[in-house]
Image 1 (spheres, helix red, strand yellow):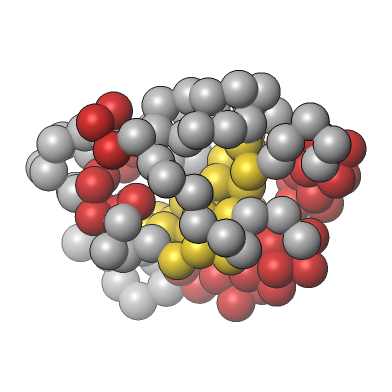
Image 2: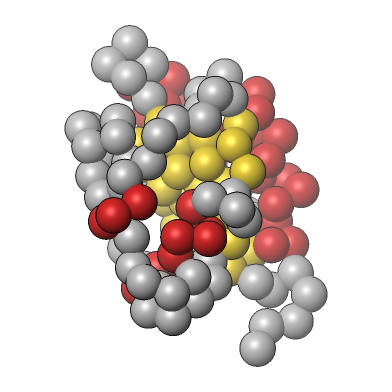
Amino acid sequence: MTTAGEAPFHAHVYYNDAERPAAAALRARLAAAAEVLFVGELCDGQAGPHPISQFEIHFLEAGLAAVRPILEASGLTALVHPLTADDVADHTTLADWIGAPLELDLTTLDPPGVNQGLARFGKSDF
């Protein structure tokens, strides 16, 4: 069990071809942010539940207050969510969109109680 502020959080930052340079710049900025534990590579194209290009970041709930304004200022769409034992809820009812929401492919997500995102928190790309 985690204490307040220590819960694992995740964000997926989406981009299209024209936005790729902005995504790369944002990725570099987030990599330098003390609150961010992991910044994934730019992942061009669909991957898992994500319908368009994206990269992911990992941080703790305590870092949300610092990370969220950076994401908002980028002008890119982002999905911010906790990592719990319920992958579907993480990407839907527990998620918060910055920008226009995208339709995710929920069929690719882990069933409740088997969220592999927890096991790889802070360790790898999507």
